[in-house]
Amino acid sequence: MTSKIYHSNSESATIKTATDFAKTLVNGDIVCFYGNLGAGKSVFARAVIRALCKDIELVVPSPTFTLVQMYDAPDYPVWHFDLYRLEDEQEIYEIGWEEALGDGIVLVEWPARLGALMPKKTKNVRIKIEVGEDDRRVIAIDG
Image 1 (cartoon, rainbow, N blue to C red):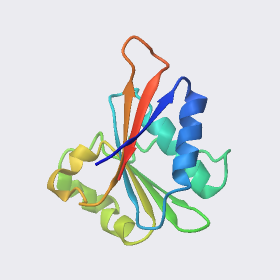
Image 2 (image 1 turned 90 degrees about the vertical axis):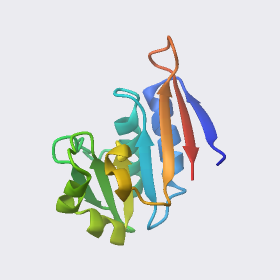
Image 3 (image 1 turned 60 degrees about the horizontal axis):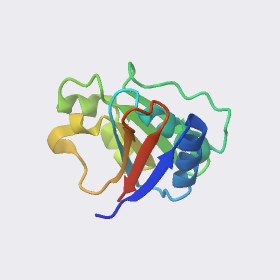
Image 4 (image 1 turned 90 degrees about the horizontal axis):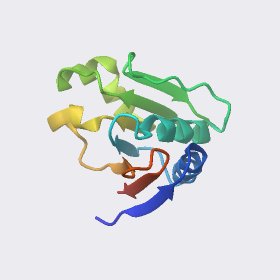
């Protein structure tokens, strides 16, 4: 699978990449975010949500503790899952997973926690901190 590679030197550059990426999304897309803690997955996801909701000032809290947040975007719902604290993949059904897959765009941080429940068709955003460069990121997008 071919990835598009982007280089980010700042949070604002990451936000710009995410905003542009959001324009490519359509109803039914599932986006999985990969990267270490602090790589910028939440920054990227927030920018996508704000773009889809057409509100750059929208408050987008991290769903780390709630595991999921849903947004009523103008065109379709946007679901933001953060599965870092998910202990068992079956717990996903308790937080609206089936409903999310039925309509809207689904954003998933820490998708490996889904195990065998990982959807077959996803778009993937992989964010890596460049070695020795705290502010620089390599962002690979495929799918």
